[in-house]
Image (cartoon, rainbow, N blue to C red; front, side, top):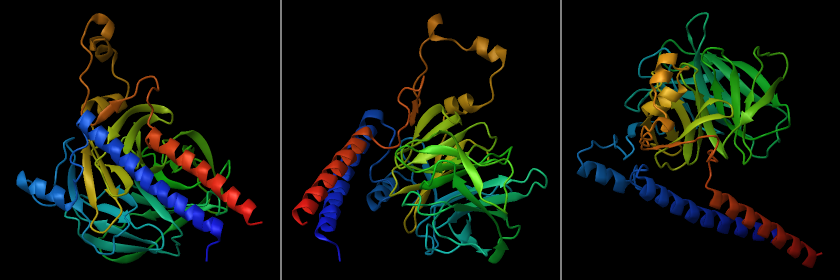
Length: 387
């Protein structure tokens, strides 16, 4: 049973949730109307499906205004909290996902129709709070490698260390128990909650992205040890409340997902552009397609969708290796009188660090801070009166 102060706290934060939801809904509507890139607010709902059908779009493969479309929906009734997403680095049309915490050390191989093709269980692994996964290729063998991140920590340091499991990608799509190698980690500056994991495709270097108001990118050692805890060192900042991250297939850039958008970086701290994402129930995952031209993003929930979002040519060019001198000379500049480039739908360019992605609307952050301050004051007052 809660104390009186506890009851007040619960009520205050319930009001906070409703108020913040209203703010976010308002900001989402503004973004959709002012920029014309969000798509229908009801996309993915029954109303959205009805609109898709009216426009001749097959059910389950809807399109939004920004060019994104639903690639598939998870059909398996066991997939209710898809929290990680990865594309097979070796198999065609194979996608991997896993549930959030309390679901067991299990992952699913899913086909392009959203149907589960195989279910795999990690031998000897735990699933305290699985929050993300990544896929890479072993440079020595060319075989696929899957990484599962047991890195959730809602108490910001409750666990003495976190774990990441490394699994050789199964070569046969049939239910099986697979061996896993466990690596333990701790942050150099204390515990953090995290949901993002990414592995550089060329170097194999593992990175963790924390989910906080002051989020950060942490880098693992080059050589991981199983006989001791590996130390994660901060190498850059991350947007507020990051829910996932992934490297581009060529390693030229990476993307960090938040509940509201995604941001592409050339390197930690070197932001290229922000990409508007489709509206989802609870945005949890992001990855690249094998050709690097699209982002795939998913959500929690039963029969949740996986969207394919195209990356505009401007972002692909900016993320590519440095252009040749000929290309640099041919590219007009504003000083030469050439017109400014036309903005790309669904993308917000970030120049000189201005407007860097915060992941959460500023108004919502201020609202939460104000409500938190009020809650603390109310609890203090009650505590004084009940002493």
